[in-house]
Structures are given as C-alpha cells and as structure tokens.
Image (cartoon, rainbow, N blue to C red; front, side):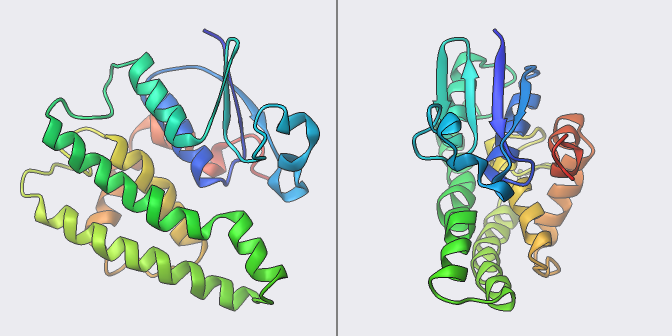
Length: 214
C-alpha cells in the first residue's frame, strides 16, 4: 500500500510516527509541512486534517490523523514486528510508559502552546525554556523511577527490543536536548536513547536526517 506521511522534521508526534513506520519496515513518501511558515494552517493541509496538526498519514484512500491513532492502526494493520508485548499486563505497562510522554509531557510543550505563551502571556525565550524544562523534568523523573524499578528490563524501555514506549520516549529526549534540559539525573533514559540510536529505524527517523531539516 502506498503511504504518504505529511509531517515536520522537528515535530515530536511526527518523529514518533516515523519511528513506528521504520520499525514496521514500511516505506512511505515524505511530505514536508513547514510549521515555521504555518503551512499546517493552509487550506490544502486542512483538507487532510481540519485540526491543522501534523502528522497526517494517507494510506490509499484512508486519511489518518493523530499520532496515537496512526501508530495504533499501524500496530493492528501490520502486527509484526510488534510494538506491544503479548501479555496483557505487560501491554498495560508499556502503554503507561508511553502515556507519560504522550499525555503528560508533550501536549503542554507543543508548538501551539508555546506560541500562545509567547503571544498571549508575553513569555520570552528564557521563560519558554523554563516552562518546557519543568514539565519534561517532572515527567522524566517519574519515567526514570519506573524504568529502574523494572528488574527484567533489557536495553530498552521494556525487554530486549524497542516497543511503543521507546517510540514515544526518543522524540521527547530530542526535545529535552533542544530545550537544554539537563539529562544527568536520568541515566536510564540516556542509556535507552543511546541503545535506540544504534538502530537504523531510529537513526533514519531522527529530525536531522529529514529532507526539510534546514
């Protein structure tokens, strides 16, 4: 099936979707949506996603939006290699790790929130850095504790192969570095990031590797 991913190189939700596609071994056409030029607000893009948010995945006649839904669709449509463990309890654990990023860190640090802080609240770049650092650090502290508590964990967030949790975590680590968050207190997260970086699926999905990263 021919697929097109409408996305932006630096978008965390786009980044996680690229990782999932790569881990599944799926090819897709890369369609850049330049958030810096507000291309996501153009009428042409809003025919794909009325929210004006990236990513959007076009698969045949199907248009999928929201990275959570896209990744779940990929997992169900292309079940191997799996991004979720077989055991129901393990699946809940992996989903919870992913949700720390997807529900509690990323949403308060995305572009439209930061733009509102700048334009409506008068926040300068120092305040933006502090805002992002606060929520990333709080979430990472919890994640670090959860990861260290798992005595059976391998090199990744769960077990010995990347899962949904790694798909969500790595783009947030990228964002943490962009906002100059000190990662020293989170050695397990740093080690997982290093392990993932060795895998082609993650390396090819990195923001700096994308055609619009200029």
